[in-house]
Image 1 (cartoon, helix red, strand yellow):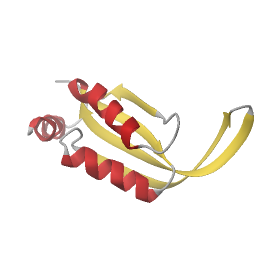
Image 2: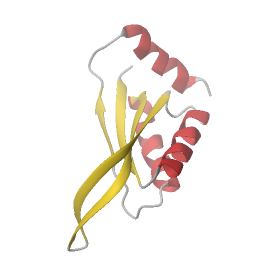
Image 3: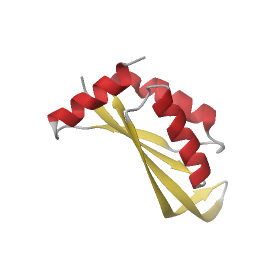
Length: 106
């Protein structure tokens, strides 16, 4: 089992909470951390934009990455939401096993 961290940006805390709650309820992620107050600066459709956004850090397994990505996109209000992931290569084995348990209890 390989645990993965998924990084998602949401436009506000309400949407971040709704996405997180759904993913945990559906056992697609074990845990979601919501970090408000992020400022993003980016180019979108030939303009430099700046906005307050909310960061989500989601913990899941490699097997769930595709399903989590698709579910986030379906729940998200952005035209092109940021959903990226990377493997968790180490850490507390008990915590990593908890991720596996929580995401496989369908």
